[in-house]
Image 1 (cartoon, rainbow, N blue to C red):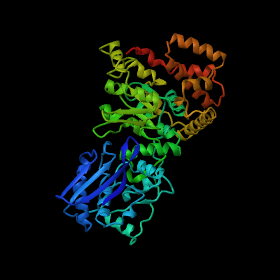
Image 2 (image 1 turned 90 degrees about the vertical axis):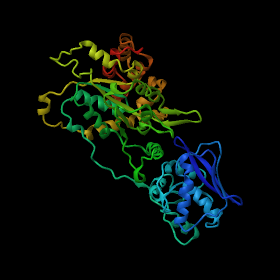
Image 3 (image 1 turned 30 degrees about the vertical axis):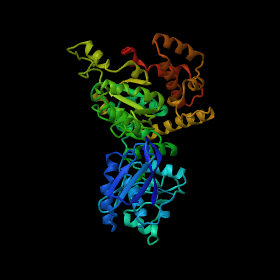
Image 4 (image 1 turned 180 degrees about the horizontal axis):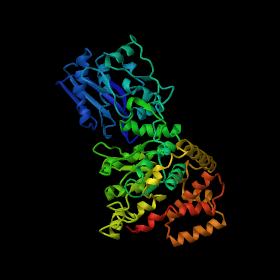
Length: 509
């Protein structure tokens, strides 16, 4: 007799169907797992055996073969424990075989028979719903799985015994409810920032259009403080965005308690982060900081201190909105449409350009430090901002009357204009920064005075084609904040003023 149990294998955020086939036959006692299992799957034999013993069952002294089909698909992770155990229970008659038919199963077993949380439950639930299956998952992951569909049949037991009692009809498991994190108002407020009015303006433009931003200034000028307040003016995640991000976080095992939040992610990795940490990868490829910033903010403080190859790995995801982790036997793609916010000092000592400061190394101190950033990377950053030091006079001023709430309202209004515009044009992007060059040329066609300014500036500043279109995108955002239907000369002039840093670093770097 062969028992069949359905489960999944993960490739990125895609859950591919896997059949767990369990056969118990006569012969020398053995327990074999075949079908390209990794170390964690092979170790499932001991966890399953101990969990069954703790549940009052024992395996017969026969030849047991577990086949994970398709055999050429790599199987990784501990979520195969529960489907293997249920297959064995069905094969020895401890469970009705028709009781687990039509369910996709995943979960890790403890030695006492309890079922532990695993990563990737939300993508598995969505895949199960698409196949017309129900889902059996750990109790801790039930609130996460419930987001897949209101009609999805979900069993979330705490142990093997509880699940067996439910399938036999002696106990009833209630359907878990979707978990939602309570909204909090603990975000830092822009009202706490004194001075730096031009930086606040740039931050508002970046939020309104989803633009990348780099801030250059001496230590203590408030660059990190400004970046930390960007989430307070960003609109909440839309339902589709929330689900996309939740699937990535689920695969990464980053959904605590299965509760989702509509707050946009804000990731701030240390400058010692490796390529795998930022882009994703490892022996068992996992999402990196780029993917975990999807529909949110990736903040890189002390930008030149990152390894150059790590920074240059950002270039392709910034253009395509996806990050690809390629291995010899498989290729994984994660969505990664993030907003890059970077901060850096003007030089190694941090005081270049400050009044009264004379660097011992002279001009080369700033040139060498800023040359660590490649021109192609800077060309992909829309807003380049000089952040001057804050004076004592600024700190003595009263708190600004306008805070994050007022700025967030203008940002939301500008984004609403963009969403309506691009839906009417049949575009998939929702913000100015996300649409194609062809669409932005149509949406941000300047008036005659603006066209003359743009032509002269593009020639004088030697803008690349990418730089030209990014200026148009920023100008379109500024016009949206002003409620203007047409991009004018004043909008282009402000957008061009944010392209200064590219001129300092050769684009051929």
